[in-house]
Amino acid sequence: MTHPDWTILALFLVGTVFVGIYLGRLVKNASDMFAAGGQSPWWLSGLSAFMTMFSANTFVVWGGVAYQHGLVAVVINLSYGIAAIAAGYTVAGKWNQMGIRTPAEYVEKRFGRGALHFYTWFMMAFRLIGSGGALYAIATLSLAVIGGGDSAGSVAIDPSTLRWAIFIFAVIVIIYTMIGGLWAVLVTDTLQFIILNLAVIFVIPLSLAAVGGLDSFISQVPAGFFSPTSARFSWFFLAGWVAIHYFMIGAEWAFVQRYLCVPSPKDARKSTYLFGGLYLFSPFLWLLPPMLWRVRQPIPEGADAATVTRLAETAYIVSCKAVLPSGMLGLMLAAMFSATASMISSQLNVFSGVLTENIYRPLVRHPTEQRMLFMGRVFTAVLGMVIMGVAMATPVLGGAAKLIIGVTELMVTPLLAPTLFALFFRRIGTAAIWWTVGICFPLGLLGRFQSSLAETWIANTTFTGVVLPLLIVAIMAIIARREAQGWASIATLSKSTDGTEASPEASVLPARVVGASLLFCAVVLLGLIPVNTESRSHLAIHGLALALMGVVILALVRPKRTLSAPSHDS
Image (cartoon, rainbow, N blue to C red; front, side, top):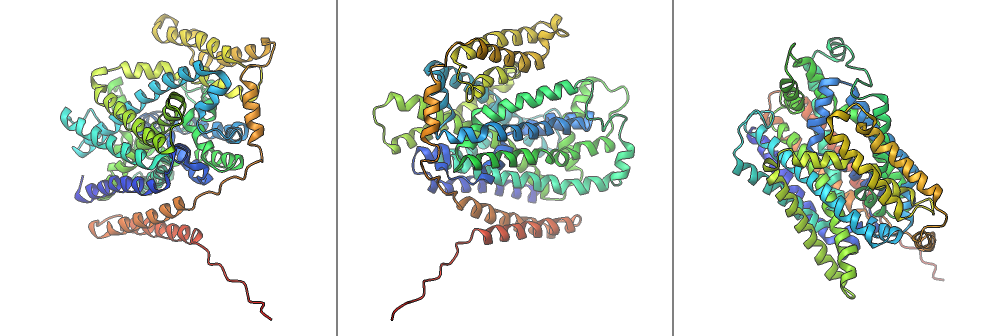
């Protein structure tokens, strides 16, 4: 890392905190804290949802699949786009139409307090452990790169230094999420989207030039590198992957929150279409660098599994280090931190909202909005410290955290399918949750722990994680003889908010923040030109393009001057 790299990384981290503090001016009550007052522009919600799918593992895991297997990694990630568009068409507007503050409010009204507590504590434990693992991954990767290596395994990292890195990264995310609430999450996600794509788009032409151009790349890849499937990732797997992520994007609380924070059902659908549309082409961009690296650094013949894994997991960052000019490696690290911060801040905000609105509020008599806002920030800080603790304990936990995450991932559809279908089918009740989870969870555990069942249907995650839970929910809906108890409250809620109240207008402040940030990024890139002898034209082109985008955005959201009416005095 050069001095410009350090400067870029430091500016990004400080700027992220500043944006969160600045946006704190919009947070006046709990609704602002957890739903942005229903005033988020649809494009802001869509870009935030897009970034919520990212973490440091995106670069390590999917970058590794792209390096090792080629185009199939892109096809797998295109599945997110298909799932998002399907969720936008079917459920995004429905969530917004109900007028609820949090997704947990829907669970309580539809299924009761027991289901609320089950979903809250089960999903929160799962997501906090996952967020802690992601925080550990980005801290380890950052220190390895700073120390001159390319992965956690290539540089000896001092444990105390690692803890400090985790602490610093965690505190940054906690501060801007705690002060700025969902507004800070949405806007910083959008800024992180810009940084991520800026870094990736900068890498692509340099990497293509390094392999001799597109034709040279295509001629040098191994056989089957451009196949959309592989032995491990079949069409059946891809179909199941689309289904799993349809339920995740359609019903997981972090995504539902994006549908609730926009002014209208139409905006909720548009935000999800944007999210899905971006995923239908962007994987071709941000998975291209590790695919190009396969040509520059082929897998040696006869390489053992450990060597292949190391080459795959480090392909992304090594491919970037090989071509980036001074200062841009810091930007790439900022992009990787951005991806992880987006995922962590989303989970912090959504679960602190549930704890505040659905757990704390019923326990207190007539709490003031200021009290609710204070408790929301307290819960955000507490959950952030839990994530920090999980990250610091990850080396001690070893494979335990991965095992917990792996087992729980089998539960995405069993957990979310009943709540999603209960939006539309009146006879689906609480029993559907207990039967679906009660059957699928033991079978998922059995498939994980019994190696002798590895080739049977029980171990097939597509069956136990998708097909079986859908069959159970369908059977429960068919055999139920009467309307579920919670259906009436949801139907009434939908009617009471259907066209009887004017939708709030979307705020223009986020667009102004984004426009100003683009101008700042442009200045930074142009400022790197004097400290580099190569890639100056790329820096100039990207810098000027960002400046133009920033100016256009600020011009579009500039307050319009109103002309006074002409006098009609006689």
